[in-house]
Length: 124
Image (cartoon, rainbow, N blue to C red; front, side):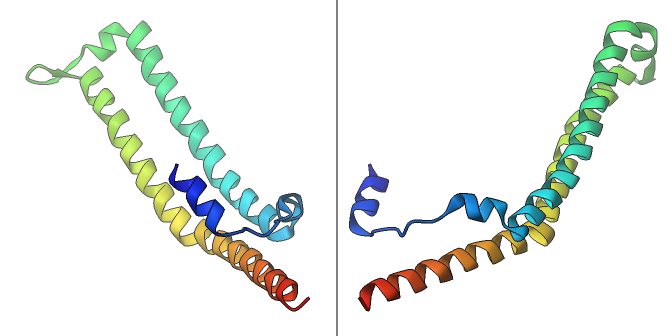
């Protein structure tokens, strides 16, 4: 609803998304993103699978009391939550430092090209 009104007011220039996707800058951005995400995802999935396997097959180990009524299973379950928050914070830091500058550079180039195209269209 709001987007339709906005798009009716301002004409957006045609952007060649395929050319952008094939540009070296975009390839660097994608490679940088994947080099971070895939290893971290693999480690987190492995950690989760280990937890599930331990819960399913290592009942004696998981029920080992640590203190009071807290056992190993509860601590490892809480560690899963902590891991999720830690990885999220790590990714946000990584994205702010490494991904956002690359994406901003690509966006600025697109906006400059669009501005140049609109100026040349006005001059016709």
